[in-house]
Length: 520
Image (cartoon, rainbow, N blue to C red; front, side):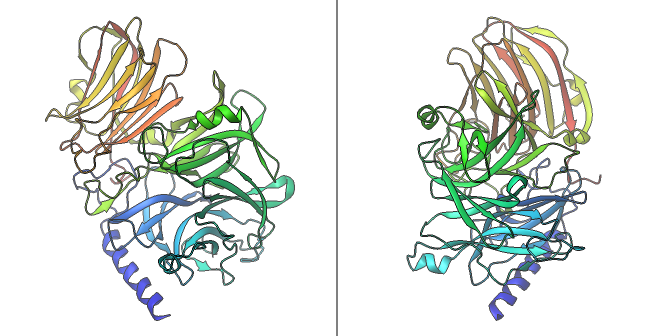
């Protein structure tokens, strides 16, 4: 007991020193101003995301004693608008069963777990334990699933005395439970990563779990282990039909190297997930949520009210190829911008789109129109009225006409640049950060990122967010997404458009944004 008490005290002190500055705008080089970051130390996967009584809870993998990965805790932050975040004390600490790996949280409204009461139902966190001591001994069964619960809207947490609630069946990688209530069978469904596939379990009370089925063999990318799955019931836009979408992050094996998130569309009956499409084709042509190198382990918020109706998600903005090497010291890692997922029918069949949440509009300070014009020589899109702005949002529609190559360069005063290219000859989008700033910390960082173009339209709609160490690009209403870290020595404050033939800017706006850490 003594070591656990000491760990809790040390963690609280470490957080207190960080939290004392949490309401101040962070000033360090590369510190994101639009994205959630911990005040200090290491962060990776978003965990336990749940909405309750007007509050969005974000838990996350956190190491309070180092800026590199280590024994995992659950950090905790809270938002009422998905934009501004209040950092709270660490929610879950390691215990004799192991460190606290990724998982989810749900509001047990009917107290099916018996961990609360009818008048005071609990928030329940379902998470993976990882036992480092067993791992050092060479054991296989190092991961199991545990519960914790809160009766005060997530401010404090108690571990369930019967942990672990799901023991390891002999699989080395057995983690990241994502839980939701499936009304037709009146059971909780757990979607769990099991080596290079997904396992489904069911429970009436969140404590006793029964294996239902497995999915993944012969489907999708298998370059590495599957992680952080999420099974989501989604309505097809402009249709009355619903489908289930299964997210599964994989590391390595992403289209641009390292870690990334694939998805499958299909049906789920409470027992088995049946994907649509051809298995042989799906095994070689995985669907990717984001083609950029830096969006991983994303999952959705549970408990979003039906009156809202959105599927809201957040990802870890990094890549295991270089996550521990990026040139930040006081903290490491950020989350992506919060996104709304939607399911559309297009030339690919049923496909996911991602869009930045509408709440981000409240960060706009000034907006300047980009006049319609033909561009046949390099053209600056940033008006002099926005000179000096370094937190930028771009909305622009381009008609490429006969151009086979067009580029949009994000530049700073030192000549460093990150470049988005539309390569129609190769039918792909390209993101080049080889001259973006600091790149030498890892050989894998500067490689060219590509994404296939969809359809043959001359029109390309771009929605871009520029922060101090990232670029997020949503193409054609989120049909294609590229998320990438960059580390320029000065923030980008210029956007230069060019092409190999005349292209037309048909509509556009540039917005200057304010920091999420400023007073609201």
